[in-house]
Length: 339
Image (cartoon, rainbow, N blue to C red; front, side, top):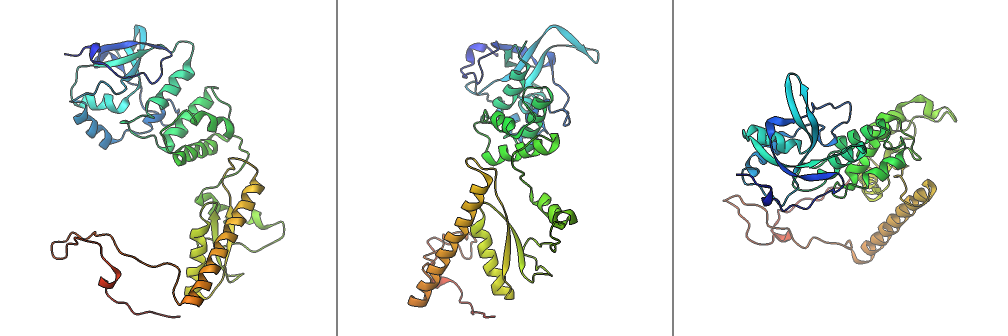
């Protein structure tokens, strides 16, 4: 028998909260999913596996966890011939799991968002920013931001989007950044710095308008050999300098051709775009200095200034199960190749 006295959870958001209440699922209206409107950001699409997992978990409810959230419909509302007295605001995966379990009633937190519709949109995101719920994806974040912008809660600018996602404490930074960028692209929001995806970079490199000022030949990317410059071309994002420097070395070893880098920086957290470019140049110089010092060590000692100490035990096949560290002398010998 359900009783609100079992609830020990702490409220995620207190403003607008009325009380926890035992409610029949049959009285709750679940808004239809609409990918275009952004009305329910954490419900960009239902995750079937997450619902399956929740079906089992909700048979043994933990009332110390956040409750699903509904808002009361004063006097009820008839929709498609049926009268509903509540509307689901947050907890769509759990509600679906309960429905599949043929659960008749559950304990929900009841809120009143009268006069503060932005709070309703915010609470959908904040409520799903906590375990054990489905993690928000970049599409969920973008959908939420688009809705907030369309309703006039936030301005259509990159800075406003970044400020809004700060309320999400558990969504990974890269997911928030990707969601902001997606929302910017889909709403045409103003941004101080253009950040391009790899798809957009390739499109930029293939567009003739980007070469007309000085009539320079097209650049290559992804390590492809530039037919005009006879070098391997790479597009390098700030933070990946070491990876692409090594890619250039591997390509030189393989083909004997040098490489060039087309660099692009992230949105600066402080300073200007020029500052970020200078920092990127410094990173390349630091890596080049490290490479030079390693070559000097090799020339002086005959070995590189690193070695393989051992391998972790990983093979569990019954014929060769490993029980201890695997030292290099146990590996098959290989022949060195030169070009």
